[in-house]
Every structure is written in structure tokens, then in C-alpha cells.
Image 1 (cartoon, rainbow, N blue to C red):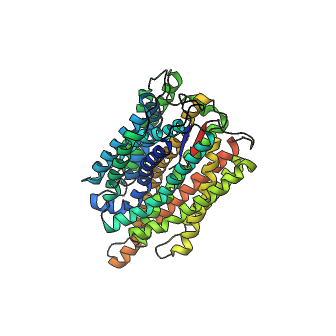
Image 2: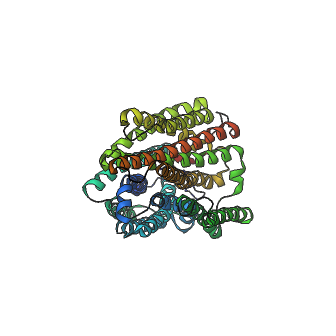
Image 3: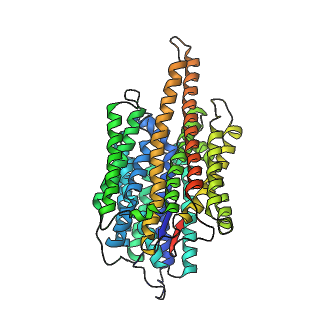
Length: 503
């Protein structure tokens, strides 16, 4: 998960004595963040088992991911406001309690709908927990050097947590039960809550503390309706031209228009439109959305390819996904060194092109192709592309932002990645399922030998996966074009002082 934060307006002045428990508080906050990050990847490996046990259809399975990312991304801006106004420690503890309760509900899910509801609740409480924890760090660490160290530690845990989630998801799914991929959050949350109560100090912003509730409702319901419409379009009994699918998609778009209108006239907008209207920031947010949407094709469908076609165990599937994380770590370090010398734009274009090329390379997979020759090179290059994209993107999205808008600009970047992933999962699932259905309809014949029919069905599934990779690569190509055309930032331009990115 990539998270960005900026110094709250009410942060204590740097001249104040540092909190003696600040490093202990960092440990507590990092534990809670590890829970949120783990949840983004640990469920990926368990998806095939979840689908079978709960009777989830191929069209519905993407809701295991999108129910979480939609509510998280849609409510993130509101969650940051609540943390600042209600109290960051109080919001942090409430978010952790709610996240644990939602995880318990998911671990006890009896059908697909109950699991989707639990994942949605996890996203909602995660939208409280994540910005509250990050805001607490900016308040606790007022010295610039200490703050840099704190966020380096926090970022390493957040980044490493994604890789740990892949392995832990495989271990729990194979040797315990997929339900423990959700239930494991409960002991982590209990530890974080028990330690936060005595050791994490409270802080809150002063002044105007009104919330943009109508805006939060409009954007969240709009995104949910849009994704639900895309899901309906993937179902054979509906399709793209069905009245139900069109009604949900049209209604979702209408609600998003309402959200924009609310932001324009609200005295306390959730997302001030001036943040989006800057050419560089607008391009950065659009690129972030397209990148999140395109990459969902890799993470989501590789899981099913590994376990459903290649016959990998959950642990083997987790290990097979790790080269992507390795590529990210390598290129993120390189990008951090090159950013001051080259600027954001060249690195972002290179990252988008690398990621798009890797997705197009993955379209060559087949039922009998080898991992080493047809997946591993693409996975490594995909990770390299991600690092070269997200490191400069986080800096670019905060260039020239007024100090009082830095928090909203930071949260917007995170939200675009989450929302892009949600829309990408729904859209690419629709394309993949339609391609699979068309292939099976064309190649399966009545009276066909069962063994041959099984092979054809596997080929149909792989054809659907390859179609998703192709569309994902196309979205990344569009992202590269957006960066080239819209972004004009110079390498000398720097992000707003006080804004900190963690990824």
C-alpha cells in the first residue's frame, strides 16, 4: 500500500520538547499499519479457496478485493478529517477496534455476501486507522532528521508487509484455513490497542471542524454503483447492454458528478477542486488511477493462474509473486537517487513503459508454459516499473500545493490508487470473463472427451487472463501518454514542505 501524509495544521511547533515516548509510539503505529498492509495482499493468495468454499461466482470474486479498496479509497479523505477533528489517538483506537471486528466477521463469513460486507467494513475502518496513525507520527516527530528516520522505518514496514502478506497468506491457507488470513488481524489489533491506550498521546486540530458528509456519501456510493454495474456486465445473463448494468453504471457516474458539484459549492469540501485543476497534479492523479487499474490485472489474475492452471499450492503461489516485490524494492531505491537529478517526469514515463511492457509479455502465458520463461521475467520488470512510477509520483502530486491543502492532496493520491485498483479489478474481470466465455463457446463441442474438454476449459481461462493482461497493459500505455502530455514539472520543483510520502 502506498500512503502519503502531510503535516497537520495543528502540529506542535518544532521548538517544543520531543515526546519521550515517540519511538515506542512509532512501534505501536507501525504494528497497526502492518495489519492494514498485510490485508491488501494476504487475501490475494486465499482467493481461490474462498471462492470455492463460499460459492462465489467468477463475476463476483473481484468484490473480495474491491469491497475493501472502494470503501478505503472512498472514505480516506473523510477519515483524515475525522482524525484531525475528533482526535488522532481516539480515531486510531476506534479504527483498530473496528478493523478487528470486521476481520472477525470476514473470518466467520458463511457466504459471499457476508464476506463482501466484512471486507467493506475493513476498508471503512482502515480509512480511519491509516490517516490517524500517519498524522500522529507527524505530530510526534517534530525534528526533521528524526521525522525522516521515523518515516523510513514506517515505510519499510509498510513496503515489506506486502511481501510478508503473500507468504503468510500462503502458509495460513495451506496449513490452517483461508479464514485465518482475516482472523490473524485480531491479535495484531489487540496488541496495538492495548499499547496505544497508555503510550500514544492524543492530539487534534483546532478551528473549523465541519465534515463534508454529503460529499463522502456521494463519492462512495457512486464508485460502488459503477463497479457493481461493471460486475453485472460480466455476467452472461446480463452483458454490457443489459438495462440493469447500464442503470448502475449510469447512476454511479451521475453520483460522481453530484460529488463534483458538492465540492464546488461546499464551504468545507472533502476534496477542494483547486487541488485537481493544477496541470501537474491533475496529470499525476489521473496517472495514479490508470496505473492502479492496470496493475490489478497482474496481481488479481496471476493468483488464479498460479493455483488454478499451474496447480501451485498457496505457499508456492505466494513465493511466485515475490519477484514483483523484489523489483519494487530495487527500483524504488534507484528512483530515490535519480529523482533529484532527472526529475519526476522521465522516471514516471520509464516506469509506465516498463510496467506496460511486462503486462504485454504476460499475455504469452499458456496452460503448459513454464514459470521461469513466461512469468518470472514479466514479474521482475513489472516490479521495476512500479518503483520507477510510484516514487516520483508521490513527489509530483505534492509539488506546489499550498500548506493548508497538503493533507487533502496527499490523501487524494492514496485514494486514486485504491479507487483505480477497484475500477480496474471490475473492468478487467469483465473483459476476462467475457473472453473466457467466448473461447469456451467456440471450442467446446458436444460429446467431447472429458479430458480434452477439461484442457479446453483451462485454455479458455488462460485466454481470459491474457486478455486482462492486455487491457491492463493498455491502461498503463495511456498512463504513459498522460504523463507525457500533461506533466510539465521541472526537476527543480519540490513538494510542499511538511508533506511526507511513505510507500
